[in-house]
Length: 226
Image (cartoon, rainbow, N blue to C red; front, top):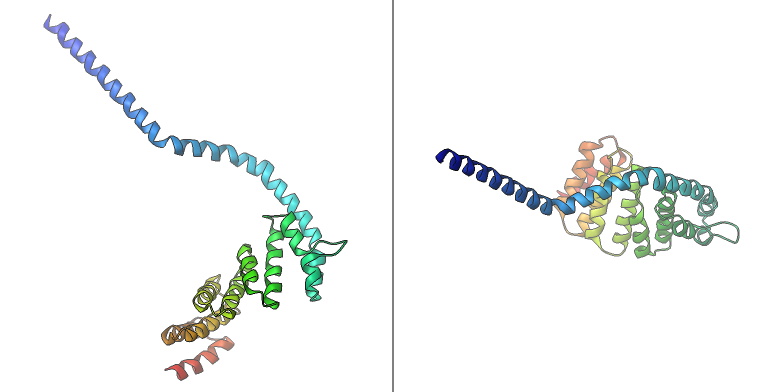
């Protein structure tokens, strides 16, 4: 009789362990249900992106690229109104951006529009377009950052200008453009009465880009500031 009772207790303990295990699974599921749903959505979106969205985007980009050439021609001719608005036959940059959003061509159009606004001294508008410019070409990206710095500087917003000049200098550093951006940053430091910041910029130019034109000028600047 004692043996039967003992077996009964073992079975009861086993059942209790199963119930505890089920409860733990339930808690775990409830805790991570949102993560699981997100994972399922991501997994379902991946093939949609690669087989539908991306090819469609590429087609749009090819079409936009064929249509932007005239606006680029108007830009080179400094006919900025037509470059922006186009004419009865050809699209301007504004229409390209509106009709083909999120394409590389629209990104390029934003860059051109930003430059046009800079030339017209429409600095806030320039900043808006240049901040939309996101592309893999690091030279153009750095130039866009520098132009944003210029736009802020023209408005007397020197702290914002400094931020973008330094970003431009750090964007794939190179001996042609980076020392120019650091020189601009040094000038802004001086406008902010930060002599040490300016000297540090000039020292970076000398150390990192000793053969640049700016390096020769930086030595004179440091001598004058110290």
